[in-house]
Amino acid sequence: MPPLSITQIVCFFVVVIAAACDLRTRKIPNVLTFPAAAAGITLQFILSGPQGALAGIEGWFAAAGIMLATRLLGWPFGMGDVKLVAAIGSFVGPSLILLVFFYFFISLAPVAWYRMFSAFPWRQIFSALPLLITTGNLSALANLDWTRFNTARRSSLLFGPFYAVGTACAFLLERPTRIFLGFY
Image (cartoon, rainbow, N blue to C red; front, side, top):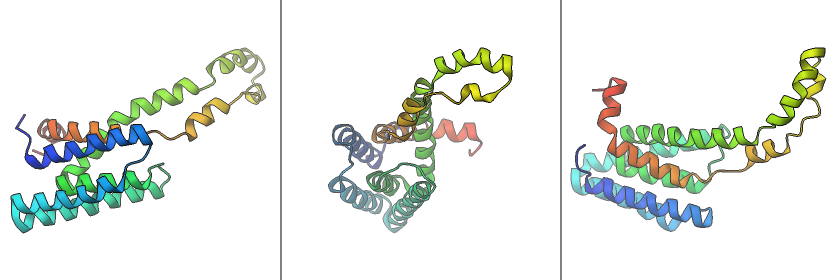
């Protein structure tokens, strides 16, 4: 594993603060995201010149575009999430933001699945199963209580900690992941 760059360290510091804010207040503040985006582009410029600044701007737009598209498709991301991920994109550029998303979803999926799985009305289904098997009539499932499941489905997760995990994994596992996926 190569040592982390100053840009990666500052970026990780930002996402850890954002995760803490999200856990504490259920919001990711603009006071953090807007200066972080500016800092990401500025750091890119200082370290790599105009090409670096361009990569930071491209990363910001790529991340914001992906987040807005997923939000339009129905994902329950708040605008604080969109601005945070755009700020991460300004630090890492357009290519690495895809890896951040990859690890974000990998870390989020087990938690979301567990949440849905544990709220599913398993006992009711298993008690209705003999009637369903003997009669073959699906009306045996009509009286299931889906309240707990629907509540779990509609309640939002706090995504801040998962952005931190995704960012850390993208930084620490970039090379092995790219090799595994055939990009090296």
